[in-house]
Image (cartoon, rainbow over all chains, first blue to last red):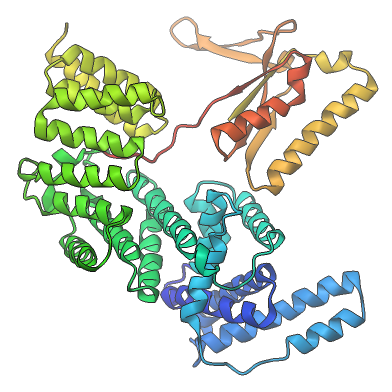
Length: 414
Length: 117
């Protein structure tokens, strides 16, 4: 789908609607998903040459239905030559292009692709293909694995869903909140996969941030009254706003405190701040809203020195209260250091070391290094930077940490 | 990345039955990894008698034959998988070479993604 004449946005927006209609008519999510994918590929080839049909949705539905019939025919030819075909023929009788009920279908599809029986990588891959309308090749490129590997992962995921007995219907009311939590988590994973890759040569992967934002926007249109959906969209926008500033001209990661704020995307910041501010007035605070609120406080400071750290500390404490987790405590330590001095932050880190869950984690060691440096203990800071550099499996992070260690070396050759 | 180390020629000392079972186990694991969408790649290396070594000679890199390590464990091949560290350890523990004195090393790849701090 790279030919410029293809209205890619149109195809991707229609993908879940067509798939939803097909599954509701015929069942068999996995076969329908293959059929829609083939119809999307056919459209990507034919539309630029023959023009976009009058009813793009109807066109896709017709082609996908035909593929589904072909698929069933060849399957049944193998298994049972006569009887089954007749039955399926009846089921696949061409239906007129009915009114799109795309709203509920997209949501139901999201729940299905983020089924709890699936591993996170499978949930991510299936969501991108079935709801996002990306091809297997595009998803494979984004996750740096061979296309055959990704194709297997997706087909295995669909088989797992079938075996789990999942049906194309919304989860029962009692499970809905938990299942929506999984959907939001998967969308956030997709976003982070793209955002953390948005330096150096991995621009293909950075497209994932745009895709995650697009899907979360679509989800918000379906659930405008859910504060966490709005909060997640705000968090993505406020984080993505910093993308251009997060790497320097030399490709080196730039920490938040040293970023050139004139390069932050003002439009994304305005939208994100407005979204989270509004959500917090009518929704009970949730994880994504509070994280978005923290991002908003950073975004609204003219410079690092103007940051309202007491406010950020209060928000991290709220976050710790909502969902205690060592990563949140780590961030709380940073905020504490900014408000009460580096020693107070280091004390929290000692507690985290004792807790054990983050021991030997590069982020804990990197934060320790920063706080030691601010406290003036240059040689301990240098050792901690070096240790963090050995612990990380990220090339840009290692380079950043080695640079920080070397900087302390130069000015203090003790 | 799973790095496979074994003693060259250890397969020759196995009975026909053991050899067939060993290759069967490897095929089975590879099939499982392929079907799960976890396999990224893998290669087996030729016998160490094919080894050539490049090191600095008289002011320029020089190529020599060998070393031919027959008696100790050598790097014999790799399997690259896209999965969690725990899952990688589980796969490595099932690799049959381990039962015949071989060693599996599990090492993460460096990635191009990073978080600003």
